[in-house]
Length: 466
View 1 (tube, rainbow, N blue to C red):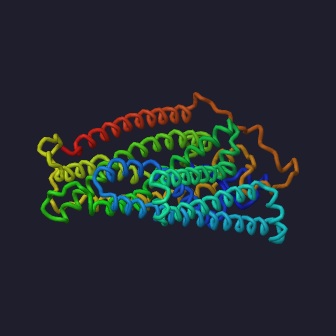
View 2 (view 1 turned 135 degrees about the vertical axis):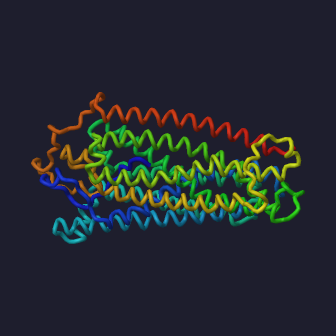
View 3 (view 1 turned 90 degrees about the vertical axis):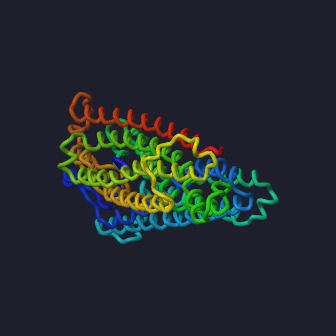
């Protein structure tokens, strides 16, 4: 995540303060962090469930597992999924309400008014509208996730309506949850730094939405794999009709886990590569809008926080490369032990880890580390949202962000600094550098997508039963 536009200042900038870099209380960021994590969790986990669970069922469960184990795996996955969504929806409600209360409290102190009087004023601002949007969508998500849980828990419903029918109903419920989560993310852009962009604000808001959606699908995908998919693989591996000719049960489990994960990992790699491309391009555009110069990246607090976030993202990308390039090869090699015709398969034998090495366990640990780093990235992003970007400092504008509409309607206090309005110059060094980086990101994303697709085809061919 290269740039995050949501900003929630709890104070009203006066004309004299609008030329200085504004940072609100760290409490704002700490309350905002769970909201960002919950949004990413709901959108990312639901999206990856809709995509990866279908592949897991079609490629592995239907071909190598008995019906009883398949049903047990699906029910366990659905229950775990619904519980995670319920907890995330509750976190959204609590975080959104807590943030509203904190904003009202801070503004009441700033204006010298009582809490109830300030709240009455806030009800006429975008802050309250955004809270209503977040609460409404969160409650809908909560209700739908409970319905999904009931459908998953009561196995008799599946027998009465038929497996395909109940699966379609659950998928439709998940699609509605995904739509509600996407609308919830829209609320971030309504009160973001990008909402006050002077150059094509609608494009900046759209870029912010695509940026956060891509981040949610990527990071939420990591949460999905570590919390749901790995558990489903462990459950199904006890009875897969793959590697049954191996000597020991322990070796069979290792081979079956590696087999399932080796087939599933390339699919997520393709999703992650697409998301990283969208994140890179949209993030560069928002950085170009908000920073406006290369110097601002190093001279402003906003730029420094952005650099810190990029530094934290780097280990995540490195771990992703380790999973895709090195660990996936070992999974294929170990999974081939359960293939009757493994002597006919052409795969590199340079890496021989022996029967005791379990890449599934190694992956389970590293993916959890990557997920925790992702949560740290979202936490840093929450601090970025409470810091005024250089675009605000340079132009002296008062953005209509959460709480800022409480500013006085006095014409003298609402000047927009027309003399300092940002006019993009497409020949300056910063614009050229951003364009070059965006082109590189686009080309690299395309190349890695093709590589991931080829790797998927190769994996399916190598692990095809003979």
